[in-house]
Image (cartoon, rainbow, N blue to C red; front, side, top):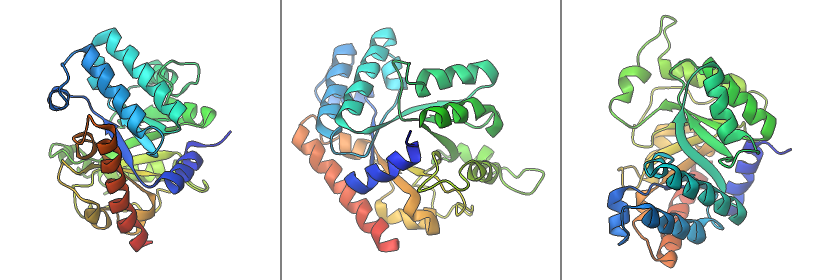
Length: 279
């Protein structure tokens, strides 16, 4: 069984360093001329899957924008996941789950067990009940070849209050998270399967990412203000592990499928140029 890190490494090599979010919020549906209802959601998600599923390395549906429509929205999410996987894209479900004990184990079963209708390649997770509380997710990922991206240094201004707080040992909370994830990936080849989320808009982090040995998801590119040129400042010597993530910058090009593909191709070219120049 291949690990998620292996599959991701190959997908990026074949398709380019890009993750595209599927974030069907009301404003974006309106921009596409779609109603803010289940039918609009289904048409939006299907268009993105058909346009990008066979050419983008990773696609990241944001679960909340499907969940807001209840069971019918979740059914569309299940269908979208199937379409993307059949097209060859890795699916990273943006759920940011975090809990303890049997509850986090249930989240792991929901997203990282192949028997689940919501089974994906990887999920996002919150470590703020303690990194150790996510152990059932890490264990399920290891058992089934999945991945977990753990929040570390996020772009939202409120995040710094918690993430940059200094622990009794002198490290920030974020560095503590980074170091614990680094231990989980130790010795993995070509890349560990437990990643971190580090916002592309935050500039020089002042944190050491050099030993993570796992993928570094970089949201915030495009409409949120960051560009590919900002990545070296944020990630420094760890640039080769970065997975740049765009949402609105690509999605705003829709609903025309060719325009979506062209926008994704531009994003890949921008990121490939910056990442290749720094290797």
